[in-house]
Length: 207
Image (cartoon, rainbow, N blue to C red; front, side, top):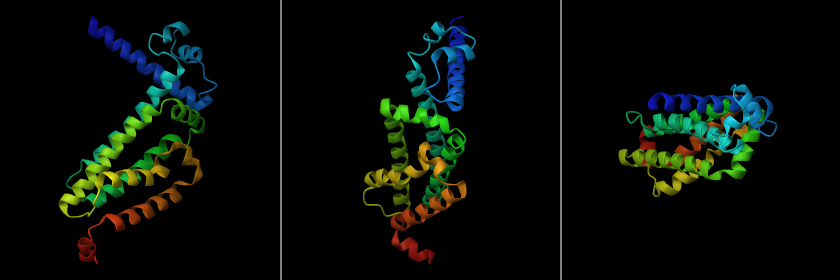
């Protein structure tokens, strides 16, 4: 009985998040009310507060879900140890771009949510950014170990690389360029990064 109740609560929790995200995308965060979200889920406005403290709590959990999905995608790329570190770095940059572009380009009103989260729940963002830095750090260490990279300070370089990828991971920037131009910029960034990361001996061997 307890397991069934717990499962039901989990289902309702996810239903509320899905309904909220749909409203945020269609009408914007600011114009969406808790009562409207509750109505979309077929429950009373009072009942929704059994699952979330307020609208910001819903927004923070939605942001965490989206960031976690991106982290999972990136982790799968970094984990492909049979592939050269340089190839994984290339795919990491492009996968980050594609995820952000596909997720947010057609949802301009959802940027209100992004703005609210960045202004009120940066701890949520920072937690996932640290996870991303850790993954990049792991990838750089793998490249150093294999002799493919020559990175003196992988931790500092991971932070710099993450900063360089900001254009491709920021939803607010997605309307700035077409997908083709974004991919050209991503390719240029990868070339620049690898020019600085690759072991000179490996570069000479390739030439």
